[in-house]
Length: 274
Image (cartoon, rainbow, N blue to C red; front, side, top):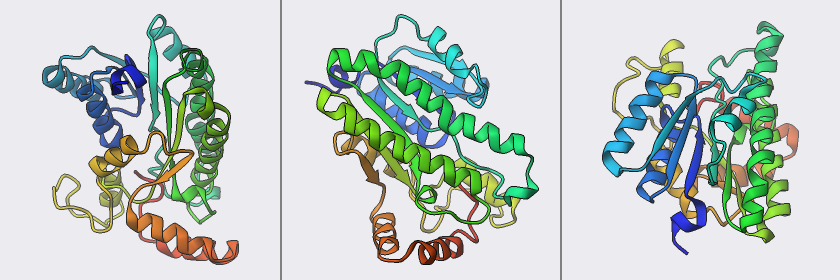
């Protein structure tokens, strides 16, 4: 079975305006899948869509939607009615604030829970039944090493990424025997425009548009290559040798020790950015 037959003909990419989501969208198009691109910024989505249409000739639909809104899933379901969706990647949900829990409004945390937990859960619940009926398809949920342990400045983000991790793993346990691949894709520091902007705002990076690679960060291309290579290797895939070794060492410690290590490791990073 070809990649398109296995995971097509349509793919929904949430968080497709830049970074990992945009690169994943391009990779799906190169494999013949038509696309529905989701993010808040329509102009950025249209630019990604036009580049992909020109390069690959696939159909690309754009839907500007705020995934933290309670009606986001209804908007997406309505816009994709009648499409045979065989691939869903949920890549939205970075945390640009990297702030103490009590210094941020509660509504900020609640919006993140909606965007990172409720919306992906609803989308999986909506699109998975048809995949099960066809006996093929994939659900890919981006999670983070921050979801393994709590750490300062990432209270809500870490909690939501833990939810994503366990949700995807549990879905894998229910669906992988029915032909549907489910993958929790765990990322560490990833060199994306969002991360560069956050670092620049905090004075840790002079020029957010520079092309010099960020030391120790995976590139979106590396993330996407590992994701595609391991779609059927769920329930969880940790991206990058460096992060795999880091998580292996953390697992040898008590939870309290691991939390301390993660806090120090993330002390000069931009929170949960990807």
